Length: 307
Ligand SMILES: [Ca+2]
Ligand SMILES: [Ca+2]
Ligand SMILES: [Ca+2]
Ligand SMILES: [Ca+2]
Image (cartoon, rainbow, N blue to C red; front, side, top):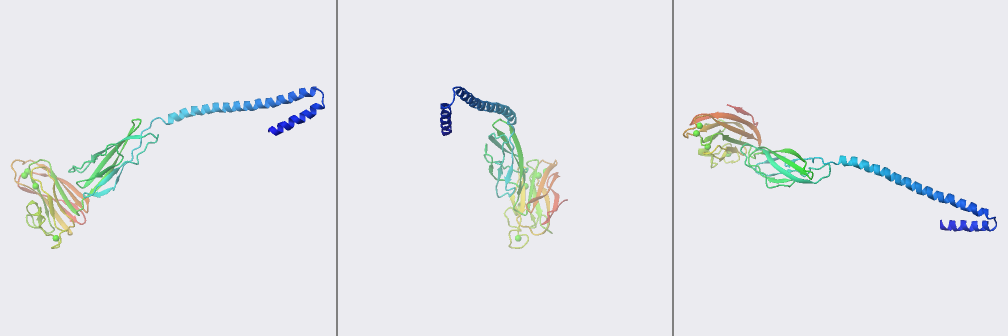
């Protein structure tokens, strides 16, 4: 541009040298349109500023944007890993996929156990404020439900729940609990074709030390065990067989002769076959020193038939 202007000025000089003075006025006029152009450019620039004003309108849109970004609740997302676990293992509750649509920080995670098998005393580990909570060690088979509540920086919350299915590793597992303490109920499991109060009946008098040999002689996995015997409380009393022989087993309950407690004592039996809950029944055990039939169990099919 500079060189073009210099050449233009030089050319004008040559023209002026051979022209009358009025030409100089024309030159001034020619220069003025140039100034106007410059002014015009400035106007365009002003218009651009006007565009900036439009930009300010955009800022108005940003106000609308502010409406969009008004604090919204976070979204709680619950999971558990694994989703099924045996009582001998542990699981971890997972909340780290929780998120906040508005981009706010999630400032708190609160886990709680909202449902569990009746007999369970299992508790969550200390995990306050942490998205994931583990290891969780279940004690009894059945369904456990944990709830996660989360809170974002605007103190808005959301919650979710997730289930953990807990299996017992034994293929046949019985668990009895009752209502009134001190009645001393006794759980009996009779082998297929067996006889009550014999070596084919597993109960407190012969089964706690694992001496009964059912199924194949010399093979222990098909023998019954009575790991939990209860006398003073409300149970549980537990009988299990890790790998029971096929057949139909029978369950009855003996109300041991303790003074008092003649009234009905509601008692709940849960039967797990192959790890899963196959049946649950509640029976009123009434009186003292009585036998009360509960059910038959088909193994391996898992059919539970109340008696
Ligand atoms: Ca009793
Ligand atoms: Ca007992
Ligand atoms: Ca055996
Ligand atoms: Ca009784």
